[in-house]
Figure 1 (cartoon, rainbow, N blue to C red):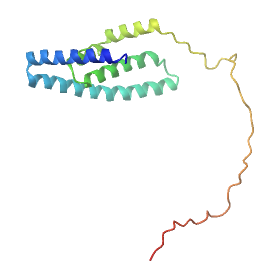
Figure 2 (tube, helix red, strand yellow):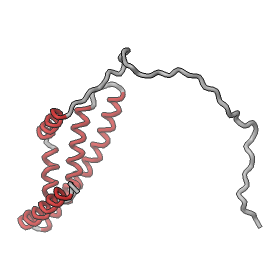
Figure 3 (spheres, rainbow, N blue to C red):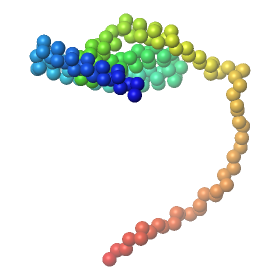
Figure 4 (cartoon, rainbow, N blue to C red):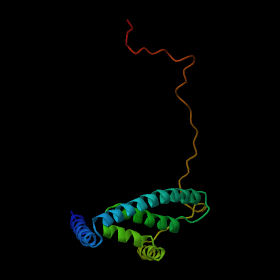
Length: 156
């Protein structure tokens, strides 16, 4: 219920902007801008998804710290989604998110509010639980060919 108000306000702003900017640009150019930004957003979304997967793979191999590049890519993906959605406000916000200084400012603002603690992975003093065990198979695998199964259907 808390989201209803902001979504309604944003929808009304988008409608008002579409009427205002559409009246200024004309219907054909307005639709061309909306479709063009949607195509740009879909291309960006596809490229950033592939790049994020590559960054994640490199981070898992221990090549680098994935947090800053992943935050950058995440904001670019958010920009792409805003560009895909129809409307001039979303397109403007999406284009602003494509600017590196804007992304750095957002990451810095969020970084001041969020604290992250990563424990060292190979610390010998970690209090992890290690279980050393042996196992025995209780079921013997069947010997010979598997039994034939009949479907129940008869042939005439």
